Image (cartoon, rainbow, N blue to C red; front, side, top):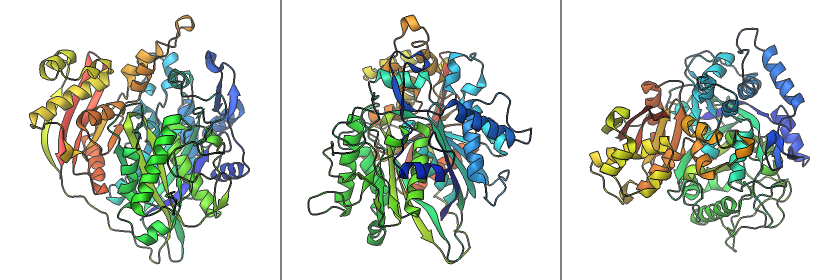
Length: 581
């Protein structure tokens, strides 16, 4: 049993989970309009911390550091994560410096705001380095893991923690999701024409797009069981699945989201399904994502017998973007905590901004707060790169204090390996010589080109032919140190000069390192898990822990995996392999 020991939400609506719940139940929203913020040519509607709130966060971090842990040059992102994690750890009964404690941080862009001022040698630009600095501030001694899976990062981080605790790699996990908004991020979403000039309206007929937000949310998890008579929130199981359709547009039938939900629910008994109180959806208020989610939920409800006589999903659906905007790396954790807190008070929260259903999927979206029936819920997210995640969370009681025995997956074997560096020749030359039939290659960034060529050569090496229906559940799980730094630097050049401002959606989408996993999934029709993890340095033992944990979802039997790092054309490395059970 993976239990929730502590949690915190730090947002413009409040600095604690309780403050946030009270604000949301009152119908408050932190979305405001900011005229030409950061020198942007368009106004934005977003949820941003005030200057006073930033001062409070910085002062709190400094005051609790005992004069030794927090670096004097800590960035706002690092301060925000540290502050939220410390609040969540209050009252927890384990030592954070133990070898059985892991820190997992979910983020999409971490310290990317430094790119406009930092030198190219500032290591704080690397998310793994930022995570290491945060670990020092918290007193965590083990190597931290950064989950960078676009919009699903927060759920991906919780799923990773649940697996690592379940298989006995650690006993405790501190999982924090955070992102700080800046010109880099906002201009990218503007280039996609995805932002609404008004507060967003999830699933509504009049929705115009999303709003962005900043926040941090932390959940502290432990492997164990509650004491006699005690009731606790537990993470049951989660899944990540890919659409294998497009890197920036969702599958019209919600293929990946549907598969993720079915993976966590299809083998549950009727009693478990009966106690589902709600589905907490992504609900970005973009035209295509909301439509996709509605179809995925309807499909899953139909398959599981959870529809009414008119074919509508009987389980209520809600979303929180009307209160916070899209908080990116924080979203999955923040929205899971908020749902737990609401169910603790016996209510399902309203979907702010929703009035009339504007999607074809047969779902019932909450228009106002309503009584909750049930003690479990599904949290779901989707994101660029075709990735989708779903997590089942429930409230449980136990009559013993003993821990569950770790679940160990079967030992996996390595089928084949391939290493690729600049010494092997130019990537485009290799593409032309050995592949040559996928013109989309020329649109990719350096990291995706490297991953694409290396994976193609690896698959040719093992003699696999397409289409690969028999391998559609194969996972693609990659690791690196520098995230998408090469694409980041290319993109920031398009927004640095006010007189030559030309943000490109084609460049911006590749500033998410997980896009390479989506490219590989699309090419090979893989609908399995796609995940991207960032480490301070290459660590084979930690990578193997994560891979073994991925095999616990019951449907993953082979993984295309390895180290994939590309800082520039002269410095890159692909060290890939296929492992399986």
